[in-house]
Length: 619
Ligand code: ADP
Ligand code: MG
Image 1 (cartoon, rainbow, N blue to C red):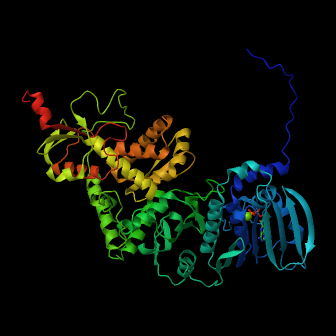
Image 2: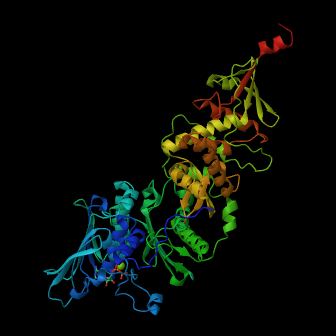
Image 3: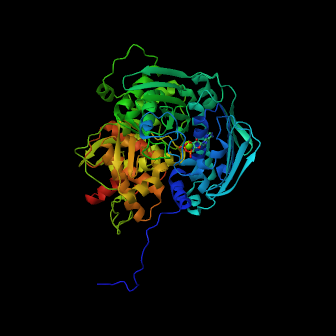
């Protein structure tokens, strides 16, 4: 046994100094500049302000400043406001139940003060003068009387100056700015009685001068830049939830999901499930890869909402998430179709599922109707062809399993001693080819006047899908199938990290998968080519493949393209109709590297009449 040679020190248990506690707490509460903004604006609103001016410099790292016209802080209290768990908003436990204010933990100011250089000037009603406090890294530098208007000004400079680890953890300036703007927008959306102004680096990004805005106008003004822009609105009072919202018509949708804001009980939240409910409510009217713009406000009995899953993340936990999802989905769907005839009856969801309303072709059709079809993509077969081929609902049974990393035998060579030749198919050959049938559930046989062609159906399809995936990764346009019921997949830590790395690429190939808790991912849509198996299975298989391929040194984009191609391609044993066989050949002709599958195995072999003649001793 190994013994510790060091003399045992006596260890005193001591409370941590408050400064250190605050710094540690700050790490949890203040994750990024946007969190400071959120806390300060919430404080301003809690103080009854109806005019809030926000100024940001250098994505909040240099300065975040908030000026409000609220009730202010009494001079003798300004220092206490920065001490831990000091709050004016709650006195005993009963208050917790009936909470209407935003903050109540009394953590924000001390946390912010601990990791920045903060100056606050505040004057309360009845006080003759204001008071200024300067606090740096949790240490009060000065407190003194100053002239001030009633209200509060907080300037947070050099955020994270004394927590380099946290600073390093921040994303790019662009990302932090986006979070800041989103936060400011959300606050302005949810407090329509207050005027807001929001400037970044001296330039005003929005200014809302009108505090008598109605909700629709404020949403249109903030999110579409024109307060008179038409939106469609809804108001539904269900037993479990009250839903109010205004959303854009499909023509104003965006290519990213940042135009949609969700609120529960006035609080801006993030919820993959509810996002999904809104987006799928548009159904086929929304082109794939587009997202609605607008804001939806839910009122739910606070006892059914746990907003404290994480103090800074806008995540919430709803006790009846599934039901709320469905109600929201139905509301959006009903309103956008202008279909009031359905009334309040809860439509049968199962019908929805088997009705196939989400099939890619009808999505495509509706896009075309809306004249929003993107220009034909070069180098790919017309979408219809692909969709037909890949959207076909094959069953899971009767197919062989194959991984994306099937080995290509080392000795394999296209030009081996074999008399058959692996070749490239040429476009002008196609009209002269007659389909003869499928051999052994895997090889497609074609004949021309001079040759027999043998096509490996899996390898061919894989090649087509692979190139299509790569195209989608670079250019977008993947077609996915929304799951009526999003699923949660728990991942091991290392796979979760891989998921995070691959997140954007997975999205570009058609997975809608969002982090949902520590190691959980919520999958709400899968690429249409993968709809034949359970989404959970597909998702984990793809991640397993990725892990494997990454170990083999594959670039992540190619690895995903490859794994998806392999998982989505027709398998050995899949029966093919003549039409499908022909479509496959057409698809193959559109590919760039059509002599081998992504694993390097050949796709097409030919046997010529001459070859056969020799074999039969005719020549
Ligand atoms: P909490 O908001 O959870 O109470 P904070 O640390 O954010 O905790 O703020 C502490 C206290 O400081 C608040 O309870 C409030 O009394 C006071 N305060 C903070 N900001 C303002 C403000 N802008 N106007 C008036 N009072 C404020
Ligand atoms: Mg607060």
